[in-house]
Structure formats: C-alpha cells, structure tokens
Length: 292
Figure 1 (cartoon, rainbow, N blue to C red):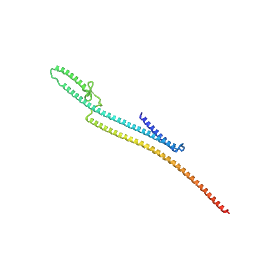
Figure 2: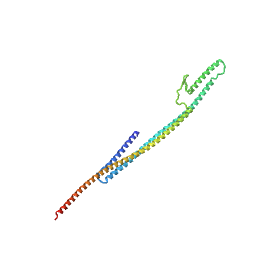
Figure 3: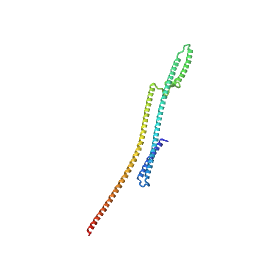
Figure 4: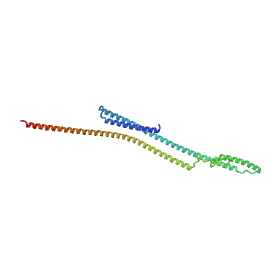
C-alpha cells in the first residue's frame, strides 16, 4: 500500500467516525424528543442501544488511533534506518578514501624508487670507457651508445608514466591528464578526517533532534486525540443540556398555562359562590318580609 493510499484511508476512516458520531447524537435527540413511544421502558432500551453504539465507536476510534501511531513509529524507524545507512555509507567512503590515500602514498614511494633507480642507471651508463684505439673506440662507443640509448628509451618507457605526470610517446613527452585519485598530503588527510568527524557529529545531532521532534509529535498527536474525544464528550453534554433546557422551558410554559387555567377556574367558582350567597340572602329577606 502506497503512502497516499494510507493517507486516503485515514481520511475516509476519520470521516466515517465523524458521521457515525453525528448519527448517534441525532438518534439520541430523536429518542428524547419522541413522546409517542409504545411502552414506558422503550425509551430506556433505545438509550441503552445508543450508549452501546457510542462505546463501540469509541473502541474503533481507539484502534484506529493505535494503528496510526504504529504507522508513525514505523515511518520514524524507517527514516532512522535510512539515516543510519547513510552514515554507514559515509563511513565506508571515509575508509575507502583513507585506503586509497595510503595506496597512493605507497605507489608514490614506489614511483620515486623507480625514478631514483632510473637516474642511477642512466648516470652509470654515461661513464666514459677506457681509451684503446681510435677506430675501435668509435665503433665501441657507437655500439655502446646505441645500447645505452636503447636501454635508456626502454627504461624511460617503463618509468615514463610515473615521472611528474608525463609519458613518452614517439620520442616526445606528452602530459598525462590529471587523475582524480591524487595522493593527499598529511595535512589534507588530517583535515579530511576532522571534517568527516564534524559531519558525523552534526548528522548524529540532527538525528537526535529529529527523534526528539518525532517523539514530541507523537505526544502531540495523542494529546490531540484525547482532546478530540473530550470535545466530543463536551459537545454531547452541551446537546443534552440544550435539549433539557428546551424541555424545561416547555414544561414551564405548560405549567404557566395550567396555572392560568386554574386561576380562571377559581374566578368562575368565586363568581358562582357569590351569586349563590346573594340569592340565598335575598331569599331569606323575602321570607322574612312575607312571613306572618
């Protein structure tokens, strides 16, 4: 699975959890607002179902959070392995450069030895021969000169690739292109080792900083998940309080209406009672007047 597929799966799972949470809250609101339930315990049963669904959703969200943290930890370990492999490669390059420098130094010493031997042989071959006869001397000198020249050319052809970057080709010296693996001096090697140590220390410090930042990011992620759960709980409590407030306002309004109706009923009863008292009073007066 690719990285973008994992990110897409995380986004889809987060959207699904959010939608399920909204559906559970709407279901709870419908249970509280419904007044036409078939039995008295039906509302309690539906509220229990809503609580079970909510706890199951929390478990799923916790599992997704753990999987996400495992993914982040594996990514951090993979990055750490890549950085360690880079450091190992740098160390191997350092060892190889040191070996090449040592080999170049030994080759330089060997070349210097060959060059010294070449100079000694050429100087020994250039010593004058004892004088005998003029004709024999000329012949001998010409023959030996040819031998010396031939020997000199052969040795120069053998030593030529090592003499100050030049070579002998067709009785002339040609400059050899500068090689990339030139021997380093002692100061340059010391400076390179110091720079490599500084680079290694810097990379180690960067690696430790990255690991610390990754740990902090994981902690921030866990705190964010906890904060999101608390926010969801607070939102559910706020919805419950708002619904309870609405029901309380409706109950207060119904109570005021009933009080008003009771006051009206009491007023009508008082009127009837006063009417009865007045009628009885006039009846008694009438009977008193016309009683013989």
